[in-house]
Length: 165
Image (cartoon, rainbow, N blue to C red; front, side, top):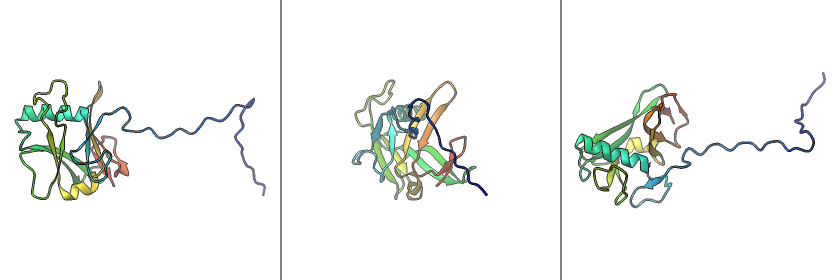
């Protein structure tokens, strides 16, 4: 039995192309960290400036008071990858929720609130899966909606609303 090995060759002294680094999913985004939290802290969630703008507009449209209510992020069992993201407005935080405050004094174009901070509520069980994630809002010709950029996700489906950890 003979063994053959294949060696890559380059012509006329050219070097092989360097392996490509994985694309940074946060490249070009303006991240906002919650009050009292360091940037990219694992013990928090972050949002982008695009998400802040969209949350403010939607809260005004739904009549949710920024002083009392907020956006609730969560994780539910189900979906094609095992877990699915949940996003909705809530009138107030629950007793054990983690409350993150974003955007105090940050102006966004078309802001109906005049730069009021927004609150994001996360229940303790969901926080196990959402710690360190970034909420973004994407608006393209093909798609419009919130994106969960979650470092805890090991696999996600094509629709982007379910994942496994």
